[in-house]
Image 1 (cartoon, rainbow, N blue to C red):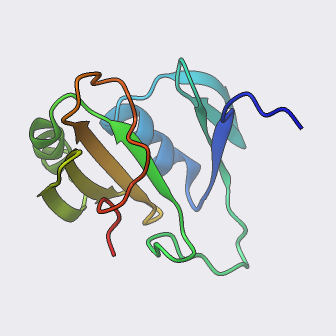
Image 2: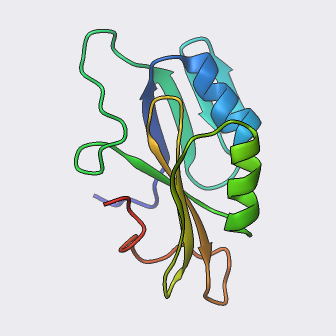
Length: 137
């Protein structure tokens, strides 16, 4: 097996229109491809894909133990949180400052955790080697 990189993260969502509004209009991810039952968001790197969730299966989005956290690098986490708050996005955890940088957690329409990370290290486009201290637990 020769995995080159993460291709996409797929989210099962209860309302694809609400999720598209969150990730495209509020977060700002560009739409790469869109069909009624599938939307790909992003332009470079891994793609975030949205598709309709099962109507019968239990959904637990905001659980760090069995849910998912999507992490975005941001230039200024304080202004990102202020902007999202003004757009009605629920703030799950306010900004926390650690050695690696600053982080806040917001919730998407399905209660998936969305981490906003502003790194302290020189290369501001580099992701941290781990999210220790940046999860909601």
